[in-house]
Image 1 (spheres, rainbow, N blue to C red):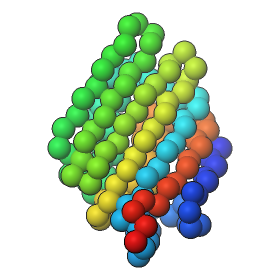
Image 2 (cartoon, one colour; image 1 turned 60 degrees about the vertical axis):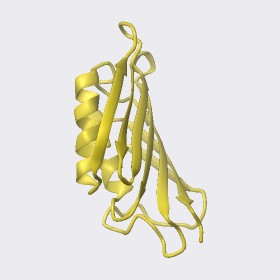
Image 3 (cartoon, helix red, strand yellow; image 1 turned 45 degrees about the vertical axis):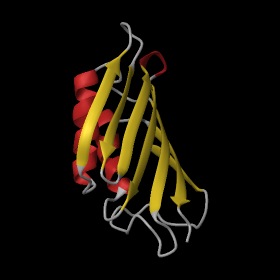
Image 4 (tube, rainbow, N blue to C red; image 1 turned 180 degrees about the vertical axis):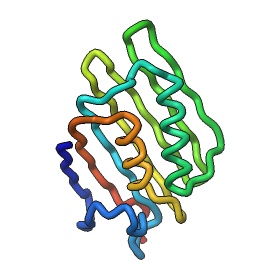
Length: 135
């Protein structure tokens, strides 16, 4: 799988065991593009994948909302977390999904991202990481 990572602020490695924040930030926000992804019309699969990603990251799920568009038009969904959110919007006609993961506290968004990659199997992932709440 081809993966590129761009950090908006400080440089960090793609190490899922690392803390999700730096001492000077309150949370980490991942914006990911999944290209060549699978299951993008399957709302049940996507909801399971989002919930599993949240739990794998150590987040507390508050609720979820998934919406199917017309046949072949994809899915949009959000899982709200005590630590913030995970969302997806898919374009199955392009084998593409836009992923947004923001977490604070002890939850690790890099682990959530890896879980989503396992569930949706993109052939290429672009990731932008933004350190939020610089203090």
